[in-house]
Image 1 (tube, rainbow, N blue to C red):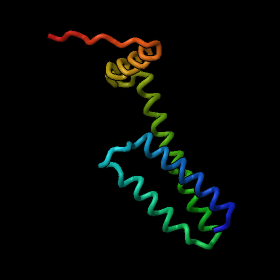
Image 2 (image 1 turned 120 degrees about the vertical axis):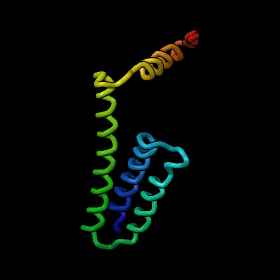
Image 3 (image 1 turned 180 degrees about the vertical axis):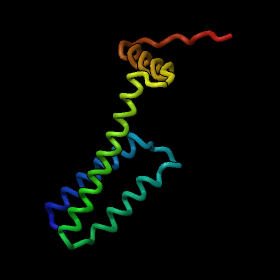
Image 4 (image 1 turned 120 degrees about the horizontal axis):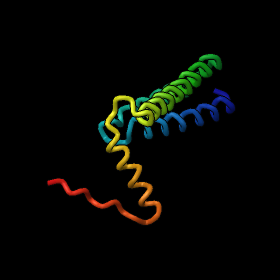
Length: 111
Protein backbone atom coordinates (compact mmCIF):
# COMPACT_ATOMS: atom_id res chain seq x y z
CA UNK A 1 0.00 0.00 0.00
CA UNK A 2 1.44 3.36 -1.04
CA UNK A 3 1.67 6.33 1.26
CA UNK A 4 -1.14 8.16 -0.60
CA UNK A 5 -3.45 5.16 -0.26
CA UNK A 6 -2.42 4.72 3.37
CA UNK A 7 -3.40 8.31 4.16
CA UNK A 8 -6.70 7.90 2.33
CA UNK A 9 -7.38 4.63 4.17
CA UNK A 10 -6.60 6.30 7.49
CA UNK A 11 -9.05 9.14 6.75
CA UNK A 12 -11.79 6.72 5.68
CA UNK A 13 -11.13 4.57 8.77
CA UNK A 14 -11.50 7.55 11.12
CA UNK A 15 -14.69 8.77 9.42
CA UNK A 16 -16.16 5.26 9.42
CA UNK A 17 -15.44 4.71 13.12
CA UNK A 18 -16.93 8.11 13.91
CA UNK A 19 -20.09 7.24 11.97
CA UNK A 20 -20.37 3.89 13.75
CA UNK A 21 -19.97 5.52 17.16
CA UNK A 22 -22.49 8.26 16.35
CA UNK A 23 -25.16 6.20 14.65
CA UNK A 24 -24.82 2.69 16.07
CA UNK A 25 -23.57 3.53 19.54
CA UNK A 26 -20.66 3.20 21.92
CA UNK A 27 -22.25 0.77 24.36
CA UNK A 28 -20.32 -2.34 25.33
CA UNK A 29 -22.74 -4.73 23.62
CA UNK A 30 -22.25 -2.83 20.32
CA UNK A 31 -18.43 -2.91 20.38
CA UNK A 32 -18.32 -5.76 17.87
CA UNK A 33 -19.13 -3.32 15.04
CA UNK A 34 -16.06 -1.17 15.63
CA UNK A 35 -13.94 -4.24 16.40
CA UNK A 36 -14.92 -5.81 13.08
CA UNK A 37 -14.02 -2.62 11.21
CA UNK A 38 -10.64 -2.41 12.95
CA UNK A 39 -9.98 -6.08 12.21
CA UNK A 40 -10.80 -5.63 8.51
CA UNK A 41 -8.59 -2.57 8.17
CA UNK A 42 -5.69 -4.36 9.88
CA UNK A 43 -6.16 -7.44 7.72
CA UNK A 44 -6.26 -5.39 4.51
CA UNK A 45 -3.30 -3.19 5.45
CA UNK A 46 -0.92 -5.80 4.01
CA UNK A 47 -2.47 -5.76 0.53
CA UNK A 48 -0.11 -4.82 -2.27
CA UNK A 49 -2.50 -4.69 -5.25
CA UNK A 50 -3.45 -0.99 -5.69
CA UNK A 51 -6.76 -1.77 -7.39
CA UNK A 52 -7.82 -4.09 -4.56
CA UNK A 53 -6.81 -1.48 -1.98
CA UNK A 54 -8.79 1.19 -3.81
CA UNK A 55 -11.77 -1.18 -3.96
CA UNK A 56 -11.65 -1.79 -0.18
CA UNK A 57 -11.31 1.94 0.54
CA UNK A 58 -14.30 2.64 -1.70
CA UNK A 59 -16.32 -0.06 0.09
CA UNK A 60 -15.54 1.49 3.48
CA UNK A 61 -16.37 4.95 2.15
CA UNK A 62 -19.68 3.71 0.71
CA UNK A 63 -20.60 2.05 4.02
CA UNK A 64 -19.86 5.31 5.85
CA UNK A 65 -22.09 7.14 3.40
CA UNK A 66 -24.84 4.55 3.95
CA UNK A 67 -24.68 4.89 7.74
CA UNK A 68 -24.84 8.68 7.58
CA UNK A 69 -27.66 8.62 5.01
CA UNK A 70 -29.82 6.16 6.96
CA UNK A 71 -29.40 8.26 10.10
CA UNK A 72 -30.25 11.46 8.19
CA UNK A 73 -33.32 9.76 6.67
CA UNK A 74 -34.48 8.69 10.12
CA UNK A 75 -34.06 12.26 11.38
CA UNK A 76 -36.11 13.54 8.44
CA UNK A 77 -38.89 11.06 9.19
CA UNK A 78 -38.92 12.22 12.80
CA UNK A 79 -39.00 15.85 11.76
CA UNK A 80 -41.93 15.24 9.40
CA UNK A 81 -43.75 13.33 12.16
CA UNK A 82 -44.29 10.22 10.05
CA UNK A 83 -46.20 7.82 12.33
CA UNK A 84 -43.89 8.51 15.25
CA UNK A 85 -44.59 9.69 18.76
CA UNK A 86 -42.35 12.73 19.05
CA UNK A 87 -42.99 13.66 22.67
CA UNK A 88 -39.63 12.30 23.86
CA UNK A 89 -37.86 13.99 20.95
CA UNK A 90 -39.53 17.31 21.73
CA UNK A 91 -38.63 17.02 25.43
CA UNK A 92 -35.00 16.47 24.45
CA UNK A 93 -35.00 19.46 22.09
CA UNK A 94 -36.70 21.70 24.64
CA UNK A 95 -34.28 20.52 27.32
CA UNK A 96 -31.31 21.42 25.12
CA UNK A 97 -32.82 24.82 24.35
CA UNK A 98 -33.44 25.54 28.02
CA UNK A 99 -29.97 24.34 28.99
CA UNK A 100 -28.37 26.61 26.40
CA UNK A 101 -29.66 29.65 28.30
CA UNK A 102 -28.96 28.18 31.73
CA UNK A 103 -32.45 26.94 32.59
CA UNK A 104 -33.84 23.54 33.42
CA UNK A 105 -37.26 22.20 32.40
CA UNK A 106 -39.60 21.52 35.32
CA UNK A 107 -40.65 17.98 36.07
CA UNK A 108 -44.21 17.27 34.92
CA UNK A 109 -46.51 16.07 37.70
CA UNK A 110 -48.16 12.75 36.90
CA UNK A 111 -50.56 11.39 39.51
